Length: 135
Image (tube, rainbow, N blue to C red; front, side, top):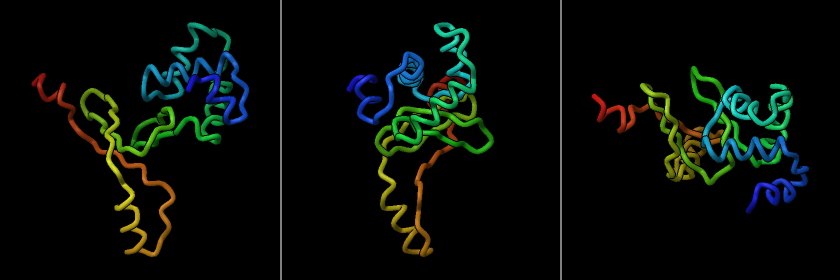
């Protein structure tokens, strides 16, 4: 599905700014607000950080984009995808998606605690294979 169709299917206008944000996230995979602004400023030099953030929040609330929170790091954004965990390299900072089901773990936590799991986003601190091979 094109980004235009994706936005329209969620009843959002397909503005050039939103399309550029989605293109940036597709290209980068994971990006902070500042990363996105740096890339977008080449095409839209007068676009403010607050406008980018507002558009990101609109797309997060419409479940087009996900906000990913890591301990001791800035928040990252990514296009909404099927469930996965994040592998965060502690040497180079690369963030990699790893597809694995977390449903069973969430259910087990609910059974053991009686709590309701609202979000089962997981991340693992790793040293990626590129950094390991560079040693």
